[in-house]
Length: 358
Image (cartoon, rainbow, N blue to C red; front, top):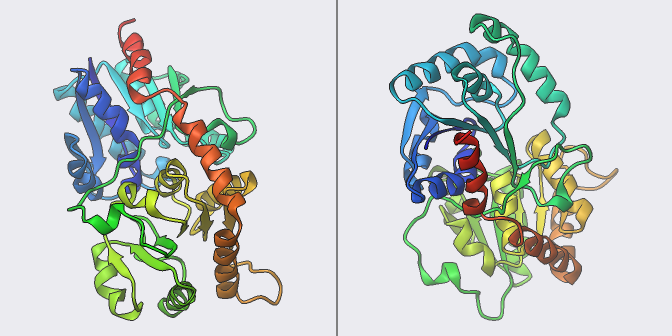
């Protein structure tokens, strides 16, 4: 079986699809990952054979603006390497490709945010591309793979094949402090993922949070891009800052403060780590609302703080609450157990193989 995996957006999209792509490769199938130039390094870091189709990063919600160029690039690729099946994510462009090639299409996403309205709009914007390719309509996916634990799925989420979240990130040399807990201290991780240098806060505000946490006796780690470490490292006091393999360090943490990214959130859930989320966009807010609604996190909207309250103090107070109240960790461990009981990528691969064999 030859499977074309397609990703766009942030590095998180690469990390999210990597376990399934690796499972297919390990089973002896041929795979290629079609990605944007900014994602090529991430693909290489997790050992996936990747080919660049566009020079710029695709942004979700912009299918209509970039569809023609992306579809043409994918069609050119598939004239040279014809897949038996296409796997896509948030974008519907790979769905158009699969319809044009007359091969099965698998949608593989983390369905935690309501997307029905946005999906309808995106599909409508692709109508000119369907007409250009002589397609009367865009068929539904042949298989929908959902990485989201059932307890976090939004109302009205489509029925799908559940799959266990398997953490996958770019690695670096692992040092003992990464996989061991500090003796006699709590450990707090702060990260803004791979799209931003820092959380949606100024350096001085972040320093205030760091001082608050270290003053209370906690060890603070900041998982950040190398350029962020270079820019902010000297301003943040007694912290470890830089690229930290999240899957390795997460099990040693008592709390994580982050932006609401899917890969970040689920890697922390997988490790049973409660979270304080400061969303940087609408998707991050949906993640925060879902996790906080389950009792595994707190949401702090810095742009809409409670009346008369300092948003920095709200963040600090949230950290104190999570560290003092065991119920947040207990609820997160419940989610971790639910996720661990879901089918593995190897198990879900059998469904994909059956599709290709029709």
